[in-house]
Image 1 (tube, helix red, strand yellow):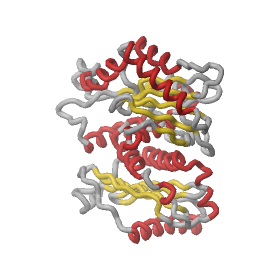
Image 2 (cartoon, rainbow, N blue to C red):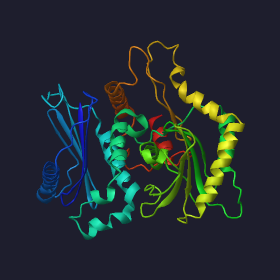
Image 3 (cartoon, rainbow, N blue to C red):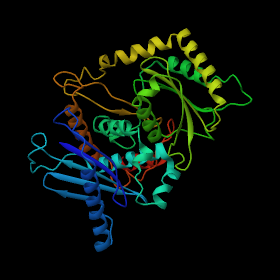
Image 4 (tube, helix red, strand yellow):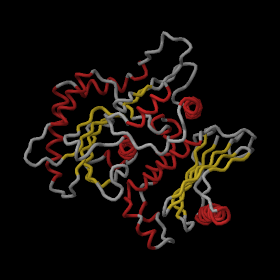
Length: 396
């Protein structure tokens, strides 16, 4: 199985392209500029031809051994091309690729939000004024994050399936409450600047604090992009950082500002503010010192590291010999959990993980309606989706 993801402007200028293959862990060699431009122009030409002759937008194309899904916005075009291959870079077979259409559409939606994460919708105004502008100039340095998003989509249920929630570190409830209270502590109560505090460990949420939910509540889809950004931007692990980010499911036209610091190689503290002023930096530094000290005092750091390290030992289904894996989501809160695959399966093998999620995609297609899967709003973390409640009632 090979997946080719392409992003280009509506004028045919290449923006991003990445290939993912289940047959090899070796990354394909980078294509030259002329090849990228030629492919993007041909892709945009195909979509424009269909729009002009059929007066319809081309959303999906399927042929023997090939499945293409398209998504268009005002300024950008997104395409995901799944191919069935027998060996690396060679012969195609006649089997239809098993990536589900709604999952591919969700990937394109994630890529669109990833570009907005960096630029915001205001940043795309340059394409509206100059359709031939090369957007790669503004996205320079973010390619690693976007590539990682594509690869993690193939193997991670929370990214593959819309509405699957976000992974949480397993902790005792009282321990998580203690960590949350440490995040909630505000020394300067008269002028609080933090709108959200997050403690992360190895790409999973430990605890979250949202002191004013009427002003800001983080959405699951934004949180997934934020976690991917933090753990796939190497410079963030080296020093305390103050950086603008756009959480487009919350507000696509504006930026929030993130204070990011790694307390250990795996554990990250992330504080969000709606104010641009760098004067908050010392306040957040002081909060970091307090949180770090408090986590050590209550033994939370040791508990977090132990939980992450021993996750493979969590096998609550071990007494069910025919059950090898499951994905659990708390529909009330948006929390998600899954055990690791055990022998004879290799949970670390890329191809195995892809095949596992392909099976879940088939199951999802049978259990849930697909018509509203991509239009449903992102879930507020900690709050049930109303449409999800209605969908659940309809199935009962």
